[in-house]
Amino acid sequence: MATFLPFVSTIFIGASALFVAAGWYLVSRRKIEAHKKAMFWAAVLAVIFFITYLSKTFFIGSTAFGGPEDVRLYYTVFLLFHITLATVAAVMGIWTLVTGYKNKLHVHRRLGPITSVVWFISASSGIMVYLLLYVIYPPGETTNVWRAILGI
Image 1 (cartoon, one colour):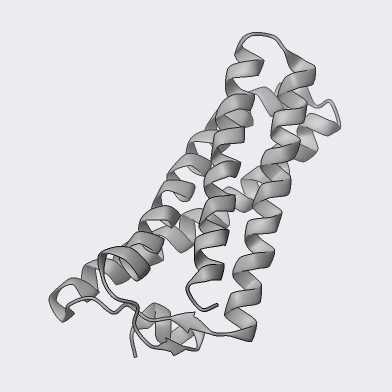
Image 2: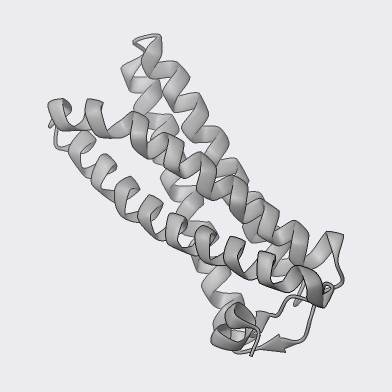
C-alpha cells in the first residue's frame, strides 16, 4: 500500500495534465463547451490526486529519499521546487477555474495560459519526484512529512 497509493496519485496528476492539454487545444479551436468539460475533469482528477496524496501522507507517512547520499541535496532542492510550484499551480488553478465559471473572461484569458504552463511543469516535476522516490532509487524509510522532505 505504501507504494501503490503514490503510483495511483501520480496517474491522477498525469491524467489531470492531459486534460489541461486537451482543454487548451479545444479552446484554441473555439470549442468552448468541450473546453469547459475538459477543464472540469482536469480539476476533478487533481482533487482526486490531492485526496490520495493526503491519505497516504496522513495514514501511512511520507517516503524519504532512498537514493545515494551524493544525490540527496539535488533531490531535496528539486523537491522543494516542485512543492512550491505545485502550491502555486493549485492556487492559480482555482483562480483560473473561478474566473472561467464566473465568465470573467478578460482575466481568464490572460491567466489560463500561464496557469496551464505552471500546471504542466508542476505535474511533470511531480512525476519525476515519484520516479526518483520509487522507480529510479529504492524507496527510503516511511517517516513524517518534514523528515521526508528535509532528510533529517
